[in-house]
Image (cartoon, rainbow, N blue to C red; front, side, top):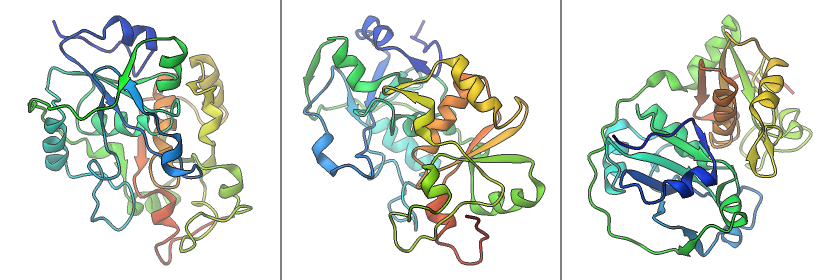
Length: 280
């Protein structure tokens, strides 16, 4: 019987115990933080067996108008197979910041119909703190996998669906950006993007669901989300470019919410397109 993740979030201890499992695939989905000095924060070492999952250049549509746009399912399937991912694989995704970009990779696999995937709680910093073994990063030759994508369209929203929701309010839009960006006290990092937020949306900065690079406890997450919404309300998560919205999607999943989606274009698209309403 192939290895299964116990939940959408696994500990470094769980990963270490299962490190030798033949079905385990470890993906390093690190992205430099927007405000960080690009490559400076990236590590020379990695967890043994880890394979780089390139969100920007491989697992996003590089020809799309906006950054980090989800790949068509067939293209995702081909690229996942190149990483050696099989239908029987058990995937653990981590990043080098703790929890930052790894939930985006987790959400992409969920969107492609693959559920045996989890985010490593605390990421590479937690692995190192536990003094588990690391190796130098290297390019390894992978055997082509047999991964199959089955696209779940309901897990991503486009701007038309978000626009319709302003009137219907059937779903709650929760924005993961900082409160200063949400209220337009702080200007957007992209000068061509308007400032403010989507009308009727609420603000939950992604940092508020994290504690020292780990996801907050389930009980704390449940308390946090109850301030916004009841358990049966559908949620749409947004951010700047669709990365940190996935942190909120992970947090909501751990808290027990299952009617969740991510606005793929997020504020970069919303604030760039003409005639879309904004609030400050």
